[in-house]
Image (cartoon, rainbow over all chains, first blue to last red; front, top):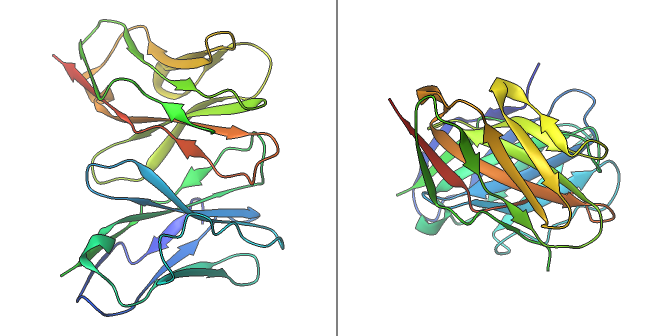
Length: 114
Length: 114
């Protein structure tokens, strides 16, 4: 596709359930990022993948959060045992690489934990 | 620590007047600087970036930004504001040699009134 694609666009889940959020980056982009945006808050970095390098997981808030990127393309962000404070918009982005390459964002996955 | 500051939570301007949204960054090597805009319930859209060269950068929708190394600033400007420019604006920085993630400011809401 032309842009970064995320699914689902909206997800309502019960507290304690696991959720998976999917990101399909722009074709050919080697770098992929996950950010979280809580209501009224800024953008919180979660994780970064670059090619075959070990991902930068420094932003993951707890061990309930994990992400993988298969085949250097599609990525899945998994949140286990969801809590109400996990409610947020999860934004995926991709770029050709590091440096001055532009990072393009998807429309986000809106997660509500009830 | 690497950081970005947007000192104004909100900027109000009348339609047709010039607008400025401020951004400063911490000094830590050579920065790549970006501006993004976010409309309600949407993802982030890239506006412009500074990589190297001319300090005045022109971007989408008539926006421009000036890189000022001595003041460590990258303010976003537009000569004549439109009501449709009303949105949330984020400044972001990426430094050479880091893992590639973007560090975002807290965002500035721009309100353009008719």
